Amino acid sequence: MKHLTNLKLKVWRQDGPDTVGKFETHVVESVSDEASFLEMLDQLNEKLIGENKDAIVFDHDCREGICGTCSLMINGRAHGPQRATTTCQLHMRTFSSGDEIVIEPWRAAAFPIIKDLMVDRASFDRIIESGGFITSPTGGAPDANLIPVPKPVSDAAMDSAACIGCGACVAACPNGAANLFTGAKIAHLSVLPQGQAERFKRAEAMVNSMDDQFGSCTNHGECSAACPKEISLDVIALMNSDFRKSKSKNRKQLSRG
Image 1 (cartoon, rainbow, N blue to C red):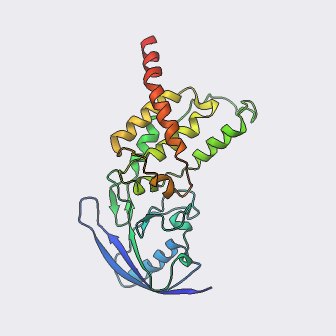
Image 2 (tube, rainbow, N blue to C red; image 1 turned 180 degrees about the horizontal axis):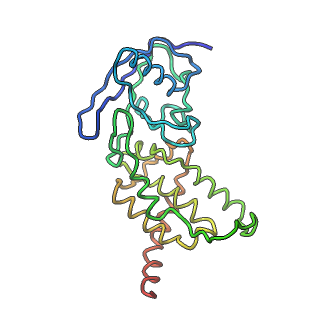
Image 3 (tube, rainbow, N blue to C red; image 1 turned 90 degrees about the vertical axis):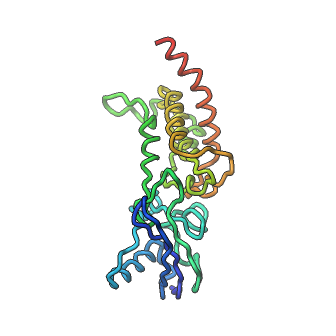
């Protein structure tokens, strides 16, 4: 085990969404290279609390790359320099002694800052609430193989379901678009038989909710590059296809009603 020394951290501090923020500089004199990035921040906070100063607020939960809450921009990159890695999975061995590390919250209008490095991602919840569900009949659980699903289809659904809703795609996008997140949430339901009942209603409602809150996609591809779960841009194409079809299919259903 090695130790990194004299790390210079430039950390964004802000009391709330309506206050002016600024960078504060802190020095971490020594930290194990086996520590995660969040453990390094914990160590810094212990030092600040010992000096009767306010700890740096940041969001975290599972620390296993599952929950998606560890939302940090590190040296200008969502979740830091390693691909397919969340902040909590990023280890200090990625850096070197004497490095300067700039730590910021997600920068997106749809994610207002709560405090310091923590942002409010309730806008994602509103997209899910608008249509991210399937019809589920009551009664006992069906047998596992009752509905045959081809392997490529189940694989595609699982690939999309890997999205953890961290918001890195929005933070990395120059336009602050949420198309990768929304596309993943639509695709993982819509390719399965169980998701067909609300397929086009889902696409129209979720895309409309997304458009009300986020910027427009112009195919930069930064979203997929920053995604810690490497969600493919294919989900955006599928979302756009379903949304276009929904305009005719949903209108036909309304006219029949």
